Length: 238
Ligand code: FES
Image (cartoon, protein in one colour):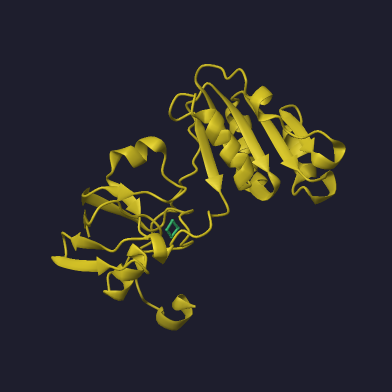
């Protein structure tokens, strides 16, 4: 819509490549790919790439039943040798603990699927080396902003020489937008990483599903659509 309304013939557009917080590290020794339902869409691209690279991988594809599992024919055709199918209506649900009981050194696990699956994987991954598990969520936790339980905070925009107040009823992204500060956003649920902003001071209360444990601990960036200040003040490189 924006393009239709504003871009004219002859305008010069500056275009950057896509942001991707669920990218395949091609240097791992081997891979376990896990897809739940429509989570097969990013996983199938990873499987294709690993096959093309000649990397060892296994693929677990879970769904309610074969009839509703997207791309099943294609997955079976192209990745049949690596595939274990888990169709619930056939009584063969994925047992994560046994499927991942013996991860090889340098193995990485990539998963996309419903929250229950990713939460179970997250629990298992607490015992794995950092960087082993990579996930992509497609649903957010509900009630990211709960005004009853939030506190207001101050945001200093160091590069703009501007100080804003973020009320308990609004997100940082909303406060920035209201002040005319343009921060790109997409999902507004902490899932995509589009609204990432750099933080130079203050402690962050991370609520997104994008950053890894190490990235959170670095305390140097946050998702403006959902994350907040843990204390009274944050300074952003904006
Ligand atoms: S807009 Fe998607 S994480 Fe904030």
